[in-house]
Each structure stands twice: as C-alpha cells, then as structure tokens.
Amino acid sequence: MTPKTAIRAEADALYAAIAATGAVPVEADLLLPAETLLDLYGEDIRARAYVTHDPVRGEMMLRPDFTVPVVQAHMAHGAEPARYCYMGEVFRQQYHAGPRQSEYVQVGYEVFDGSDPLAADAEVFALFSKILQPLGLRAATGDTGILRAAVMGLGTTERRKAALMRHLWRPRRFRALLDRFGGRTAISEARHSLLQMLDRGQDPWAGVAQTGLRSQQEVRERIAALQEDAATPPISADEVQLVEAVLAVADKCPAALETLAAMAGQMPALLPAVDRLKARLNALEAKGIDVQALDFEVSYGRTTMEYYDGFVFGFYADAAADLPAVASGGRYDALTAVLGQGRSIPAVGGVIRPALVARLKGGL
Amino acid sequence: MLKIGVPSKGRLMEKTFEWFGARGITMRQSGAEREYAGTVEGIDGIELVMLSAGEIPRELSAGRIHLGVTGSDLVREKLADWDRHVLELSPLGFGHADLIIAVPTGWVDVDTLEDLDAVAAQFRRTHGHRLRIATKYHRLVREFLTAQGVADYQLVDSQGATEGTVKNMTAEAIADITSSGETLRANHLKVLADSLIHPSQAVLFLSRQADWATAAQATCQQLCSRLGIVSPHLDDIEFPTSAGL
Image 1 (cartoon, rainbow over the protein chains, first blue to last red):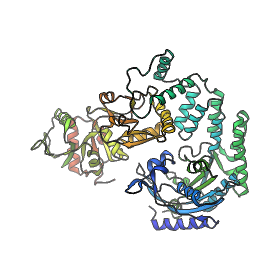
Image 2: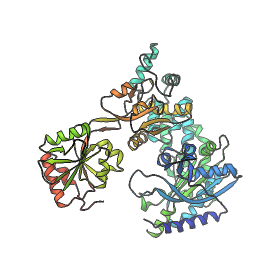
Image 3: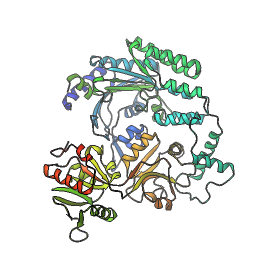
Image 4: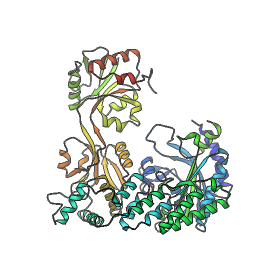
C-alpha cells in the first residue's frame, strides 16, 4: 500500500495545481447530518456511508463525498459564478476484500457557472486532462442527457417515461421495463388474474386484512395505473430498437456524434441533446483537447455515477484495471435543484484520487 | 486436536447430533444440560466446541475452529467474501429455511419484485421517505435488491419478531427466513414470487484459516471418510500451514 505521507504529498501537489487556476479553497465537515444528506446520494454511496449516532445532533455520517457539502456551502454563502477547490478524506464502507480503500483522500474542483455550461464542462475536463497528462491515462466520456432525451422522445405515456427515467441508472431494471412496455414480455400471471377480477367487478380485498402504512387508497391508485397501462398500446418496436441503438453508441467522439445525429433524424427529440454534444466537442477542442482521439460512450457512468445528469468523464490507468477511476466527474444540475429546494445552479466538477496518482507515479 | 463447532442448543443441536450419530460419531453435551461443553466418541483427536449458531461463522473465519456446523444463510450474511474464509464440506439436509421478501396481503397489486420497485417509487412520493424493509440480513438483502435493480427502499434493522414490524408500522415489508410460512400468514404477509434470496440449510463448513497442521489434516481426512463425505472436495483444498491467508 502507498504510504500516507506519499499520498498527502501528492494531494498537496494536485491541490496546488487546481488552486493555481484561481479556484477558492473550501472546507467541509467530516461529520455530516445523515438523515437529510444521505437521501440525496444514490444507493451505492448511501449503502456505503458510515453512519453513527450523536447524542445531540442525531444520526451523523462520516463524509462520503465532497460534492453535497460543497454545494450546500455555496448555496448558503456563495455568489455566482464560483470556482472551488478542496482536499480531504472521504469514507466509504467496502463490502468485499480487495484493493479498494474504505478511507481515502480526494482532491476536487467544482464550477458553479451558468453563463456557458458547455464551456464549463470543457474547462473542468481540460484542467483534469492537463494535470493528469504525465500519467498517460485513458479518458472516457459520456453524456447522460442523450439517453434522457431518447426516453423523453418515446411516443408513450408520461408514466412509462417516468418509470424508465427512474431506472436510467439500473440497466437491468431499465431493460426489463423497456421489454415490458415494448410488449416483449407478458405481464405476470398474478397481475393478469387481478385485472380480470376487477373487470368482473369482484373485490380483490375479500377476506384480506389491511395492515401497514400503505393505505388501501394508495393500492387503488396503483391499480388504476396498472389498468391504464394494460390498456396502453406497446411502445413500437422501431422506437425500442432506437433506444437500444442509442444506448449502444460507443466510438471516438466525431463518429459517435455522427451516429447520434443520424438517429436524431428518426427521433427529433434527440436533436437538442445531440446539438449540445456537438457544441461541447467544439468547446473541448477550443481548450486544446484532441476530440478526434477521445472516446465517447452513451452508457458511460450509467451504473456508478448516479447524481450526474449531463456530461460525465473518467480517467483510467489501463495498467491497473482492478482500480477505480484515477479521476472522475460530471455535471449535476439536478442535485443542486434538490438541495436548493427550487433554486438550482448549473454545476460541474470532479475529483482526483491522489493515492492512485502516487501509485502510478512511483510504482508503489 | 481438530476443533469442531456445533450449535449449543435447540433443534439445530439435536439434529446435528443425530446426523453425526447416524454416521457412527457420537456427540453429547458433557455435564449438566446447560453447560456448553461436549464430548465426541467414535473417533480420536476431535474436540467438540459448543457455540451459538450465529457465532460459528466468525469462529470459522478467525480460524479458532477447524470445522463448524451452521446455517448457510448465516455464513453468507456474516462473512464478507465468505468463500475465501470457509469451504462447504457437505449440506446436512436439515434446518431448511428460505430467505425471502414478504409484503402485506392487502397489497393486492404486488406479487413480484417489479411491483415492489414500482410501489417503492409511489410510496416515497406519497410519504416522503423510502419504503422500509425490516431484516437482520442486511448484506444478503442489499446485494439481492441491487442486482435486481430495485430502488427507493431502505433497510431497517430487526433482530427478532420481524413479521410484526409491518403491523407496528416500523416497516412496510420484511426480508426474513421462513420454512412453513405460518408466521407470515398469521401476520397477514405474503411472499413475493421471485424473491427467493437464499435457500438456507445446515452445512458442515471447513475453515480455510485454521491451523491445519499435519495431525489436524489427518484427523479431518479420517472424519470425512467416516462421514461419507466425497473426498474430491478435500483434494481441492489448499491447506494453509498457519492461520491467515
């Protein structure tokens, strides 16, 4: 394992490189209120947070990440536009033995600037790319806005779209829902008989006790939704195939853009997202990034980067395939909307793991 | 000495004694009934260690016992990467119980995990908090629901009388072991069709971490042949010479 002193030295150097851009240093508490904040994270971070009890403050957690406390601090005191840098430990339980640490240092950079979001995306990526350049890492990029646009463009009910949107992050459930709504899989036997029973005017609650917090009214509401869905025609095979094709796009940026632009011809709802991708590539190019050689994958970050809702990126060491990304980040406008209770700030940022940088540099 | 840990009370102890007894190895509690010490007859070099079934996984992973009888659910729940620490020598054919997810029978719209997931979304919208699933099997249930892509739930800890949590409004659903399903029915709960998380039974486990000195290995081989446990398993084991991998 890399000695902590070496990691700290690497963190200092990375932090200095980010601070040199003029970013404002920001600190975050190690102990954070668990109840309100944990809910904002995706299941992965939530399940892995160390939660403890404080006699006065109630449920507290060890900081699992900087993004949420930094957004909170900014919303409470900050003025836009703002650029922040930070450095410190985060804590995440690991459920399996292996090389992943449960306590590690992050160095990060967050940009709150709504004047030109695509330029801000490019700015964060280009800064990380420059700082990590000596390590010869492989960069991965994606944009969760593309898949969102494809789902929103489907010619089906809002309810179905909402169900699919909710599971953008869980490929297995997303797949199952798409198959169900596309008429590829039948409804369960139990569902079928419930619907028949209701059609015949029979009472599905005959002889059944009502227990628990979920009321019969809630069950009735869902039954109404199930009846509505049963009467809704399936999503067309063409549209299902188009969503699958969008999901499968993985290429160098220019080729991926071309493929997606062609798909937008069949699904005009994709067009704004594809235009944004194009403008972002121009912004990246303007920052000196070689987009011809840059990878783009629609599905990138789909399982691990839950609170991001636009541009996403990561830097990987191919020599250390068992390790997490050396750096990762993305855009998270929606998270700021949840934290701001109606007020939202266009936000993009990322973190670097100094332990991995030190290990790659020193062969430690 | 080869140390073998067995459950210290109840049906699990009785059934374990019966299973070994039927194979010519007599185990019994020594001294008073409540004294947790035991003896083994019919084979030399074995020390019986009476333990709570819930402690046996930890004792195996720490290498303080060479062999142990406990539920396959407990080993999977209590040990991270359980198969790095222990090896299943033989299922024993008793102590059957299924770890499943159950919901109120009044939820006539819910029969599968897909329904549970949809209801979790509805519940969170309506009540402002996540649907609570009471369980003591946090690791197994979380891994299962993650793999199945179920969202918007939270696990709440329940170490006993889990079936009562729904009625008491401290949870909306439960994940627990059941054999006959009677307790579930009595508490107005039904099992989701595709929610079998783990079919558990009593298993004879071998610790990979114990001190497998030559004498212990020889005793283990002898015991296995007496128990009629297929030896290919044993050939595959790399016995570490000292505790710890």
